[in-house]
Image 1 (cartoon, rainbow, N blue to C red):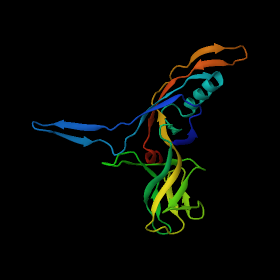
Image 2 (image 1 turned 90 degrees about the vertical axis):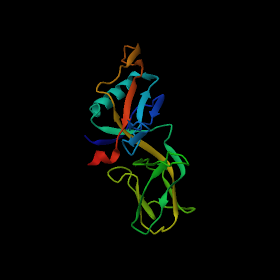
Image 3 (image 1 turned 30 degrees about the horizontal axis):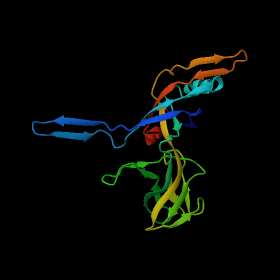
Image 4 (image 1 turned 45 degrees about the vertical axis):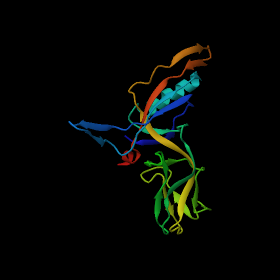
Length: 212
C-alpha cells in the first residue's frame, strides 16, 4: 500500500463525517471499566454525489481503479472542517526546533488535539506571538510525507505562542471493494449525458502509518 498525493477528483454534494471512538466496556457487579481502543478518532465518510456528467462518472471510475479500491490512500477536503483561523499549535523554540500543525476538536473540559498532516500549499500562514512569520525565511513546512504538517524553524521563536491559519486535507481510503453503482440518467449518441453519482464510503487512515 502507499499514499497517493492526489485529491478525489469530483466535487461531492455532501461528505458526512462520523467520528468514531472504539471503547471496550467491562461491566462489574458495582460499576464498569471503560478502555479507549485508539488515541485518534478516525472518521468514517460517505461521499454523496448529485447528478454528474458521464465524463465525471468516468473520472470516478478511473480514480477508483487507480487506487486499486481500498489499497492506496488519497486525500479529500472535508467541507465540515478544512479551514482554521488563528489555531494554536504550541510554543516556539530555537532555530532548528519543530512544531506539528494541530487543531483542537475537543472542548474546554477535555481538549482533543488532532495532528494535521496534509496542509494545503499556498494557504498556510504562521504566527509567533502577534507577528506573522515568512515561509522560507523564518520557517519551512512539510506538506506531505512522514513529516507532513511539521513546521521547522529557521530562526528562533523561543517562548512565543504559535498559531496558524490555513486549509488542509484529510487522508482517506475507499472502504469498499467494489465501486457503488452509478445510475445512468441520460445518454446521447456522442457519448455524453448524465448519471446519478454514487454514495462512496471512505475511511480516514492513520497517516504516519502509510509511511512505515
